[in-house]
Length: 90
Ligand SMILES: [Zn+2]
Ligand SMILES: [Zn+2]
Image 1 (tube, rainbow, N blue to C red):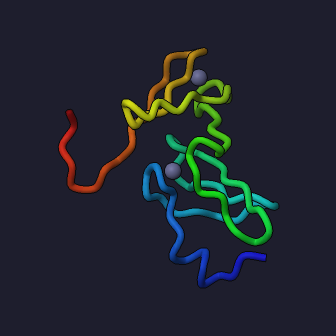
Image 2: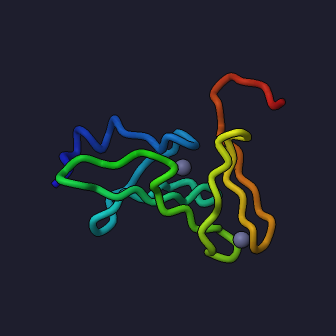
């Protein structure tokens, strides 16, 4: 079980949004991100590569593009870029 203290300091690695514990997974509260992170042996797996990345429009799994720091849906074309705090868009 993940403690509330740990949950309070955890943030989505992609959008820095709040995470909510739902079932056995951490769900990102940002609706345009919406990634879900598995918890393995009480340790959240915060790797974007391994997260579930459902598209908010069509719920297909989005592809993680590390070269662009973005999630891309190959089905409907929806894109979501990593929100680097303080960084300007390229
Ligand atoms: Zn997120
Ligand atoms: Zn989509």
